[in-house]
Length: 329
Image 1 (cartoon, rainbow, N blue to C red):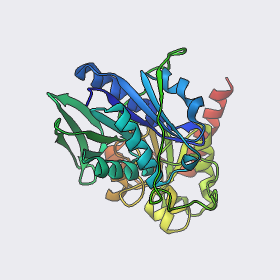
Image 2 (cartoon, rainbow, N blue to C red):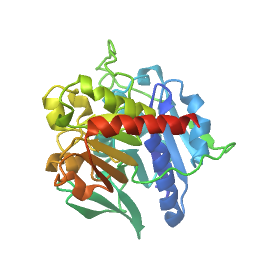
Image 3 (cartoon, helix red, strand yellow):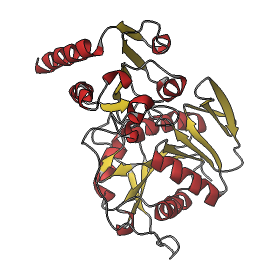
């Protein structure tokens, strides 16, 4: 086993998830302590086009697993592919983004490799040969530290925006190692027959650096148009409270909260959301929180960086209009 840190590059249809670039920076901080180097693993079909970008964000060696069987994510083939890359790289630490794919993949790989595993980490450091991680517990009420033994492989999934990405270095080069994938019949037993897109074209809440969420105060699905307008102006994602989703204003895929999706964007704008405990658990890790609500005693104001006691139907369109003017200049 080396002192190197291997980062799993999460990509979909040739587009790399921004969380990957953040992990490459986190890996660089760890290798500055361990004396190892930052490496990366890209899994998919036709991934050669992504190598230059990954090298530009700090990877010194890149393992590619390129196979038609990996065109779309399937748990068993991807787990086999990442394990094959890990066998070639022999890393000390493996970092994976905390996404639906990352959670699924990390647990399977950890089981196969008998590794120590920590999910949804927000901070990483090295103590001797151990990896020490911090992660939120009990709906974000406090942060706990866990020590992953240096006597075995250490795997951690890291929450999006827990780290910032380093600047892209144009022209950076990396050593490339193509890994041959040998799948068993068991790995290939699940097939994808059809993929049906259900997205409206707006980013998923877990992928946006900016999230604009609406609550039950929007009163209807049609009224969510002002939320979408603001989100699109900011190149952000649209979220919703559980109450808004239960009322049918938005699909549950956009629900932010303990029973929905946990988000940690740079900017979270809560419009007409009072701030129930389960909702706060899903967004309180955001860097900056802006709350717009007519109820000055609403719990959301206790966690907000900036609060505005106002009618969202008045202030949100005005905010969108001003932002559009700024973008024009």
